[in-house]
Amino acid sequence: MLIQFTVKNFMYIRDEATLSLVKAKGNELPENTFQLDVPGKTELLRSAAVYGANAAGKSNLIRALKTMRSIVLKSASKGQAGEELDVTPFLFDELSADQPCEFEIIFVAGCVRYQYGFTATRDRITEEWLLAYPNGPKQRWIERSFDAETQSYCWGSMDKLTGKKKVWQEATRGNALFLSTAVQLNNQQLIPVFHWFAEVMHVAGLGGWNEEFTISLCEDKQKINHVMAFLKAADVGIDGIAVEKQKFDPASLPNDMPDVIKRQVEEEFKDKTLSNVKTVHTTARGKQVLLDMSDESDGTQKLFSFAGPWLDTLEHGYVLIIDELHDNLHPLMVQFLVKLFHTSDSNPNNAQLVFTTHDTSILNQEIFRRDQIWFCEKGEEQETELYPLTDFSPRKGVESLERGYLSGRYGALPFIKPARIVAG
Image 1 (cartoon, one colour):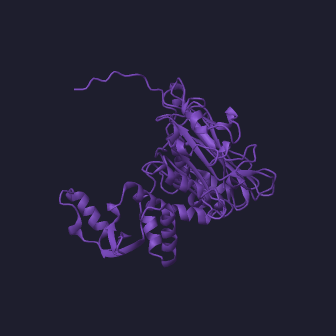
Image 2 (image 1 turned 45 degrees about the horizontal axis):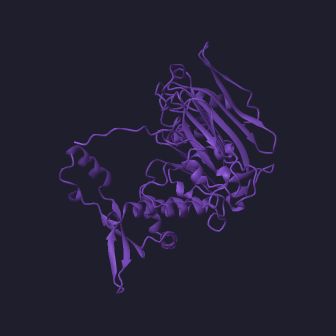
Image 3 (image 1 turned 60 degrees about the vertical axis):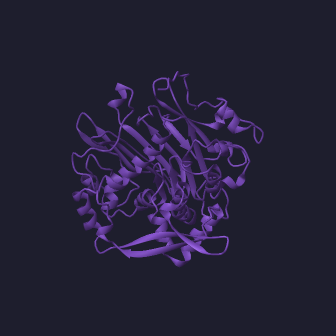
């Protein structure tokens, strides 16, 4: 479960920005919350929606989560000494350019709360820390900082971390995380932390996913029924799914494809069996008609691509993070997708959804609690400010959140200047 994410000095985000999924005061929509199974009485939200104008920094918040995850998963295994890290400090301030980007996330894995973070420049990890709360009190498992004067790393005692700490420290390159390196060298204690980034936290970019994962579910006789139940609940007019298998045929490649790319594709897919999805539609006279998925609307194709990850997330209690969920989807479809996270029947394992959107039709108190809504706004120096709706204390169950937002009460709206446009 995701509790909180903080980022600083990254892309448009200059000052510290924190997204919290901790339940605030208020007893509305109790089904939108759940109790953490850890010491204490913390309650979390099942979802959070982030609104804001174009270029206000919403996507950079998602990109920050994606960047943190990527560095955790890849810095030890794929990086080489001297290879740059994929981080970009605040773009509009010369002073920030020389400062490290900062990422910190608080989450629960295996009934243990963790607080993990690091700071990084393109050249190196400058700090790294991991606090764990396995029995309630804080334990410091990782403590690492770079000393610019000595050009070396200082390590804390890390007394609660068992195993060959000295070996792992010496093996950790400057552009790699200790967490990732130690797990790669078979540290068992840190595996739940690494596993959370690898298996529990899923970040999709603009447009979501391709259809491959959903297709793989459709190849299972039991899981295809779950996909069909999902599509029928969304009422997109599909009566069935047929998966056709065929050998890769080089002749199917476009004639105008460059020879170099064509040879690469042929090499990658030779001797492979490809899956092609057909949708089944029933005419008024009961005849079944098969269509290629590419013949369906963009919204239906996107919904089909979402079906697999959505069902997998709800089944296993994952954290799903999506940029611009509304893209190519009708507002009622967005509402349908979000509400699947808000009921225990469809979300028995407390999966969570974090998404950005421009769709204000779902910005109402029948769908969201007031603490589930966040805004991104760009300041005078192009910096992104992230803040919750609760800062404005909207009246519970009374105030129209959509009207309040569009009227400018909460900020985070585009400022559109009058323009004289001359045709011709």
